[in-house]
Length: 270
Image 1 (cartoon, helix red, strand yellow):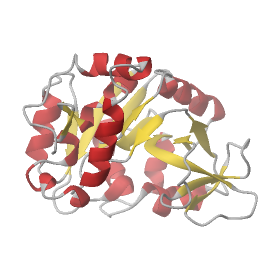
Image 2 (cartoon, rainbow, N blue to C red; image 1 turned 30 degrees about the vertical axis):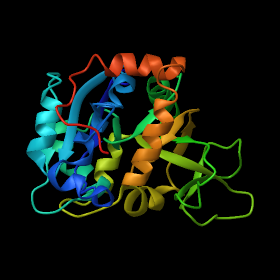
Image 3 (cartoon, one colour; image 1 turned 45 degrees about the vertical axis):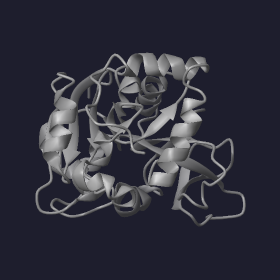
C-alpha cells in the first residue's frame, strides 16, 4: 500500500428531508451558507492531504451535485446511485471501482460545517491511521450531547483511543462518549466486509461487528462544529458563525480559503 496518499469519498446522496422544502429543488450540499455551498466547507481541510482520487456520491438531484463540484475543475468523479440510496456502507462499496482498493479512504458527509485552527488534522489523522494499521480512524470531538442527542463513539475512558461501542447507550459506567463529526479514514480492507448492492450503514452494519477483532480508533480534534439539519439549526448556526467570521482568526482564515472557491448563484436560506 502507498501510505503517502488517500482517496476521498464524500457522501452527497441524501434527501435532506429535515431541510425541506429547500431540498426539494437543491440537494443539501448545494445549499449555500454565506453564499458558499455547504459541500465546499470541508475542502480547505481536504486539500491539506495527499489526495489521489476524489469521488462524490449522488442520488437526489444528481445533476445539481455534478454542477456544484464540476465548478471546482479538480478532476472530481461521481458515483451515482440509481435505484435507491445505499447508505454510507453500500455507497462506499458502490464507489469501489472508481476509488480502487489500494489506498486508505477518507469518507465523509459532504455537508459538514466546522472550524478548527488545526488545518492539517486530517493529514495527521491519516499518518496515525497508517502507523497504527487501523481498520478505521474516526474523527471526533468533545460534545455535551454525545451519547444523548447524537449517537456516541464510546471509548473505555477519556484517555483511551480504542472504540468499544457505537450508539446512544453506554456499554459500561466507565465508558466515555465522543461526537463523530462525519469524517473517517478507512483501510481498503473494509471493502471486503461490505456486501454489494445493499443499503448498509458503515457503523452499524460493518464497523460495529469488527470492534472485537480489528482496531477502530478515534482521533479527537478541537473545533466549533455546527448542526445544520433543519431550518432552525441552520439559522442558529448562521447567526453564531456570523458573530465569529470577521473577528475570530480561525474563522477568518477558513473563509479566506472558501471565498477563493466558485461562489453559489443561489441565495442563503432565510
